[in-house]
Image (cartoon, rainbow, N blue to C red):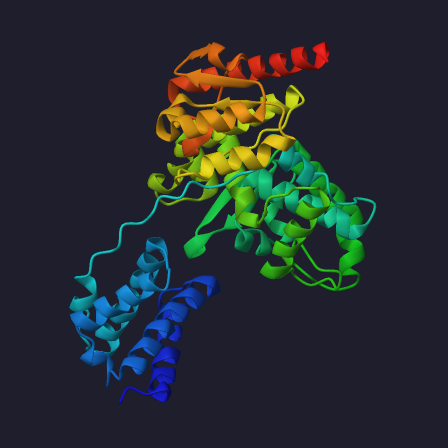
Length: 410
């Protein structure tokens, strides 16, 4: 019987292989070991006697069990990648065949668009630290550098003082696979770093000899967990309602760079991506999420707040309208939603008594049968895309004028 004791011995060998021969980062090693350990526990539960006895049926049962437990295809693909690495090790060191694992197809991954902060949100985050204290100076410099250079949390944690060149506004970064690159940062980050190095860090380090750029109140290198907590703390302090983490700031850096016209390959170099395909996901953000962000910004300029409906399940749009109407001043609707829901949606809209604007391709028009202007509901599918997006902006402006006219008449 394949025992937990035997697995512990193999695990030690596999860990040494990943550390010494593959030179993987501690984070990558932890993920590989966790994924393989989960697989081994599955084998023990199924009564599989040895790793040599794993066959195609067992492998397919394991992958099916992951999906049944709600794991995403992306997660399953990552676990299969870890098993391929593990069986490659077993073939090299133990003579166990790896052909079985290599013959399995990777599940097709869902393509999740990266989230990001808009200009207002990143400004609130960066300005949250209290720079009258050494810790506040540290936190401001850390946040500024995360955003200005698009660094990973492991990269910013690993920075030493000698890696920073304030005169040239660049920092030497050690990324995945121990690859080095020079990352650039602007004047705001340079100013924050200078103030931290002159007035904050010396007080935190005291008389210690510490090379780390960012240190704790005890003068020691910050942990990954501590950096994540700094980001979360200042997101709350800045009043951001969404969840914020370090990699979200990296997504924000890349998105804002592309939004301002940066070349995709330049962004690839700055992010340290080995493949342009990894960077290209941000081009999918630009036509959809960036346009939505601009629509939100235009709404703020007009003094209104938008709430988006993003579900396409039957009946939920009507529920959304009925729940939000008491707090709303107007509605923007997409005619596609009217076609989908029919008279029940028209009745729900009429019952609100609110001004409504409808966007139909690029045309905005009034629905006279409702005796009010009718204008937008772009977001029935969670997308703002293509030609009609300009219509959404115009519809928003028309709706605000309609609301103001009604208020003037009362």
